[in-house]
Image (cartoon, rainbow, N blue to C red):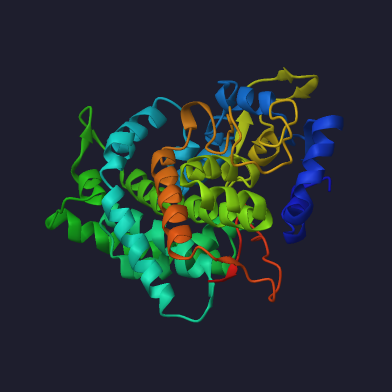
Length: 398
């Protein structure tokens, strides 16, 4: 279990939490592998994770450290990942985040509530027409957030299956030279190019039109920044919420006593969402950072250029932070989890994800009060995606 390749194996997800617990006790700054020059590290303790995520000593833009990365970026004239907001540092990060922040602040998101409820009702009505067993991922947890983010961006909701395929390829890729990865990125890019051309000449009241037209402090988005922003919003705008909804429902089915509490008292739904975020964090690991300087980090000598990830899942089960951390408790108080990250890269879409999750649970449990995991079929499997924790499917009996 000592290298990144091992950690990416699908069966790792099933035994991850005992592994994290052992690391927190024995080796909280865990060396995953080394290429002889630079090391890769996993940070597992809650306080260490928060420190990493807010420290300016750990940066996102590896081109500041590795000349080859900068040269590759220059040679690759067009790269939809080159200027992604998740992977840049201030001041570029501040400029890019400021462009989209107004669309994701709590006041703006609150205005979406009636439409989100309408989408949930439509999906539940479709489920009523099906057999008594449905897949909650395919029929509910996936379509709800992808419809919402599609409407916000101004892309046709009927293209959501394309987004799902492209998104899954991108977040699952272990090698960017993989033909499937390259083919899906090219298809995604072509799709966005055509969309941008339409919005350029026929702008609408949507986020894509806004980004095409907007100038921030007199500076328009570059072409790569525009593509990267939309790709990020489409992927982040649904991937994490699919997992939030699916993982929380799975935890409730695993803990029938907690499910009964929520059914008996719907005011506990918000607490169930927060506990779901902590217990089965939708994002397993933070995105990559690199050490910008030689640093002693809690007894480990980390060198400039070393690769570092934070295990959000491990931090959220840290016994030193959370009482009875391995228990799922919808009545938990002081639930200061880091499921949405921490610091300047705290998830922009957190208010939207929370609202979608709350409505999804509330509507589902009201419509199907007897819903339960279908225990006659195969145990749900975790997707083999290093950064994320989500289920391939969640078969339930209505």
